[in-house]
Image (tube, rainbow, N blue to C red):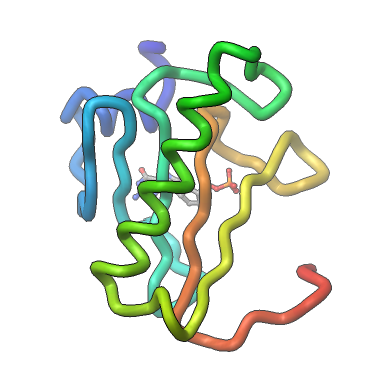
Length: 114
Ligand code: DGP
């Protein structure tokens, strides 16, 4: 999508601090980190929101979690713990309409989330 910030990061048109990638998934540090470790794990395929997923995307979304698991290990936070969050639409606070999994770690997390 030509007007999608995250598609531009995938294309290399906007710089990002990339921590992991494979054929299907890209992960980079959030511009506005909410924890000592805050990485966004995104599919290279443009899918705007969870609502826009289809059954054919199920394996791809599983790969986001496998990438998060691997990044947590490489960043040394897997054993202490981490949180993954995917916001959907306005009330959840989604601001970029290209599906992304937030991976947050390095501090104690609150529950329930705000
Ligand atoms: P959400 O609120 O769930 O849609 O999260 C969007 C996140 O994307 C937010 O934490 C800030 C981050 N973000 C927005 N634009 C950029 C960007 O250009 N680069 C990077 N690295 N992160 C961005």
